[in-house]
Image (cartoon, rainbow over all chains, first blue to last red; front, side):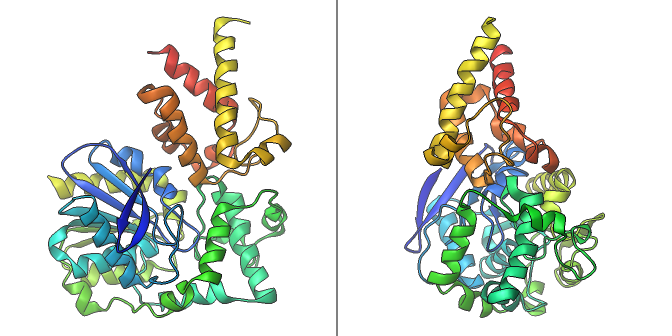
Length: 288
Length: 98
């Protein structure tokens, strides 16, 4: 691990592999970090390209400044990190909200993006910011229920990969009311403090994260239409975000949509091999 | 003890010390680390802690042990079921095939 200073903030940046092309991976919010890629896509991608993993501001082992958490800020962070490590053009792989960051970066810096891979990415159709912010500001019983839903799923399915995403709950893990089943809720008793949950809690309570995310503007069709780099979009067949993938394929000039069978939002974890094969294929295609 | 068993015992001691550095001494004292210890069920590790462990493994054993590739080749269920013993066996196998 190495620290990179960008826009006055210290970022945890992990570099792997060798090759001419550079692939930067951008993770999701708010209970996520670079390790989701480390454990899934990065080692294979590193056989074909130089791989850069980093923790978004406030996440993982990056610094947690008090402010600067809008999608535009995170895209500016990405540009500054790419500058700081001395790279010119990069392929960006974004997962969930990381996909928003990737799209915003590509829209703002078209000359610096060799290609995009979007993994069940948010682009803003369904008030992304407000949804994430609302989940993080719930109080009392509503909050406890949400935590149960999220962490029930997390402990049962994602513990080893440290991943929770707001839409990552599998339908078969839920009862008829959409709540985590007793089997999952029963696993909520965690004995050790969770570094990831503590990081996210501080993010919510001690920074402007919630307000900044809520104020993050969707990426409109006109902006998407200007992103002309080759783009691969992978979306879960039963993901809430599938319509966003269909919009990207419709509006972006060079976007190919691939549907991941039987998957909801958590395609990176539930269809790892499928996703890995397509991501590596895209890296080879973009660099040939 | 055979040479292989001695080697595995030494690797286990190394790995246990690395895990202790990564997740904290207090916790490890409550949960003695054996070949049967599960990373998820017993130690409640998070993936970012496995990245930290991976760095320590590479620093200790070098390029011969490619922990990230080994890990990323597993399905989610396999990672959830992963034990310290499986990691020790993997490292021993990497060393013996050199």
